[in-house]
Length: 130
Image (spheres, rainbow, N blue to C red):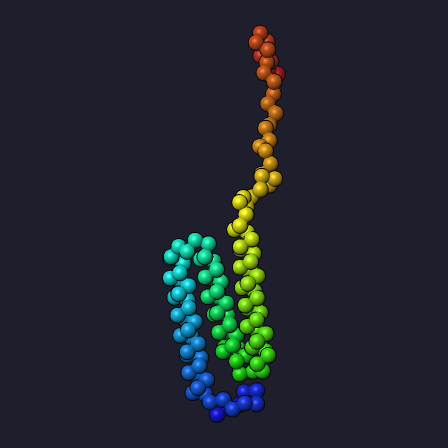
């Protein structure tokens, strides 16, 4: 047994926890790829963000050892990932609720270039200087 932050840690149980976390992350990656092939409409982004939040939480808790640290550190990390996911979802909800994401103000009317006036019908062409 070794010690981690003053706590006795069994290497076999720690290795088992890392392997289980790896399997969970690989499973969530397969779920993310599978969900990308299914059309959920605007829900695709929400589903991808939820899965990414769960994956980031798993990495921070187990690979960064926040699960074995003071509980408040793990709580702060998990809350940070959850709030980041919520803020991104609210941004996406706001952007997708707009009728025209590119307002007409951003597209100025086409500017017509000035064309030289046409020569009068009876006028002779200008002579070339040599």
